[in-house]
Length: 239
Length: 58
Image 1 (tube, rainbow over the protein chains, first blue to last red):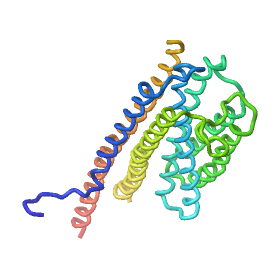
Image 2: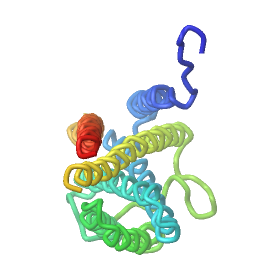
Image 3: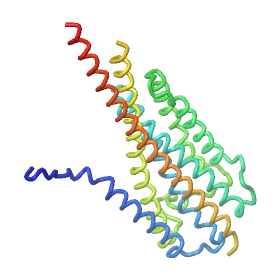
Image 4: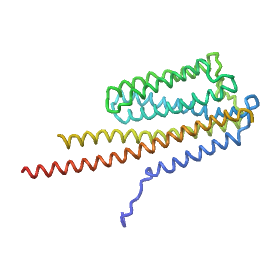
């Protein structure tokens, strides 16, 4: 390159513009939630929790789906990259599941009159959280391939709970509200302004998920690199 | 503004949790980068010392 000037690869600029896009989407979502969307008549302002609660829940499902797919490929190919992807997505899934389990009761207290009830949907979501916390505990030791394989099996089996949660919302008579975004027959129970607000919130959460997944995978990759280097240093120093 | 505090708490918790996670990731990334650089330097020194001792023994 003339004059020693280095040309940057377009992908190296990815984190900057992607972070900006995520930030803009989040600001747009907040504007829609607090300014644009109308106040629901029956529930009042507390209904606005719905936009981030359901977006967190859908992002959590996406995260656990990534764990499911990456775990299958890891068991098949034994490539570290898939194990790191599954572990990173599991941590994010637990984060978003925690947000669902916190914001749900905050909405439920003024609407139902209780913080928590052992309703099938709520219980299954708590079970899902416990499954993937167990996954992360099992996966805490990054150097043991046997633990990685067991964790991958748990990541696959644990995903069975996800369709059960969806099914419990639709079919079981419980306290949790029935689906409003997409109802049976493909219709929606949301007015256009609320639907748009929800879609903007969901897009912002999915962008945030991809951004965080990339950052978390960089941590996983560096931890692996550190382990390899430590091994090399030990060999060089002590033979 | 009935139930304002529920709405406020929900969004405060969400943003605090997300912010804390982003800070944790960036600190972990920075610390790992420094550890890797330190280990690389240690490895280079160890290899150089090994080479020097091999030359000395010949």
